[in-house]
Length: 423
Ligand code: SR1
Ligand code: MG
Image 1 (cartoon, rainbow, N blue to C red):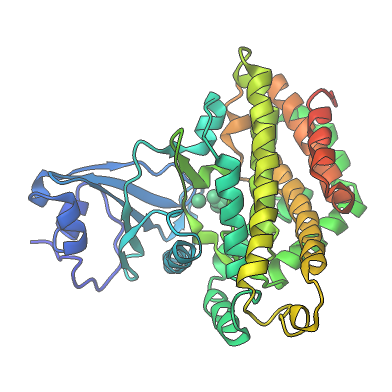
Image 2 (image 1 turned 90 degrees about the horizontal axis):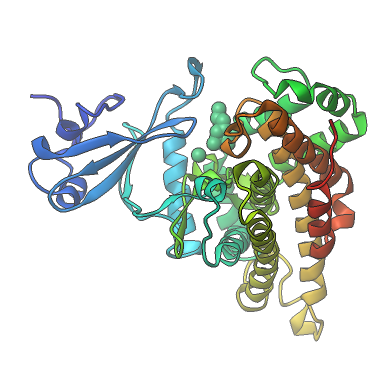
């Protein structure tokens, strides 16, 4: 008989054949799946860049088993990647569940040796990116994710935490070295030179050449990398793109925080905005019926995301500001209104978010990991035309983020780029 996971001693990547016998002895999994493990059905459904993901079903129900591989799945074993990322994902999930209850899937079981999490099976949820490509709507999308970003930004920072608790958290997450290194390279660095793993649609050559020759732009990007790497404002999700959200038309969850680290408050919201903007630009290729109405809905989602982030952040500022930063003893207790300080901080977060947004827009067309919004466009010339709008708008965001902090100006810019032709 095979060794059971109840007392795991070594890591072993699971397969659909080995999984039932390996997990059968774990009560927290076995009771939720139900029936003898020989009768379980197992499907491998991982379509991300890094991990194995299985749906395991039995007589009672289904659970998700997510297991880290010791290498980057997208590339293969030539790019090793530590298993410890599953531990940081687990720590991030527990904190996000506390800071924004109900937003992340429930975790039933975690095994550090096997780098394995057993989680709630979300059904009939599907990945938001695919919904956006298909032209489907999700009720309260902007509001819910804007609130998630605000709650996690605020409650993971010294606006909420004591200085010592926050430093302990920074210490814990500073062990996650290899994963931030991926973002530091693939997001902030590779797009701006001819890095070995890069790829782009060939007709973009002149745009890419111009971008890589822009020293002012590269300098801004590296300044943002410095903020990303050195500014430990709060616990960020670290990879909040539309593939990290699962939704139905009425409900949504945020998944996959294995890129969690302490970083700038504007990072998650910036990455999210970029993915909405790429969904927006790519629509022309995905539908002709209802094109304008669907793009207008994405614009509304962006506006709602930004508004609900600010609104929730201000609410928490007024009601939960109990940490080391901006203490009431310095403001309210002196009869001084602290809301101007809050608004000023929100302006800085918005400017950071827009610069991170521009950088994410670049890397998804120029670096290793592209997104289906553009990749699914089979006509290379149409793809290049839409990607060029995205790259040029990203450039403007990075260079002028401080001047674009009013939402209507940002949305007007987006709508303007949607009609431009750069090729
Ligand atoms: C090698 S990993 C490539 C990308 O996949 C993840 O989802 C992150 O976005 C990362 O940058
Ligand atoms: Mg992911």
